[in-house]
Image (cartoon, rainbow, N blue to C red; front, side, top):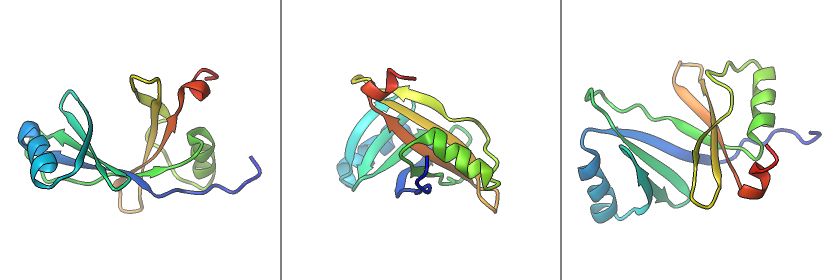
Length: 131
């Protein structure tokens, strides 16, 4: 790829909650966020184009946000950021396939203060077939 890597806007924010059902109701009904989908102990909302993921926290620890940055090609971004010295905690991997076949891919790393960050990409069904 001859084009320089472009890190996109923040794509997703994660927040831990004690009671996932109460949080689902509050974020949708009180705060007014648009629910996207839920599965297991996870609930996803649209925040004007930024996805908010709520997850149940069994331990009751304070929430640490994880910032997820959108990239066009997760494998190329992973390779370029690795070449820049970023140490990834894992390789890009698919974490979910939606009903329409769209795949969610992520790879995690830490910032200079040891806080988690991630790059993320969605792969549409036609592109996923070539994997």
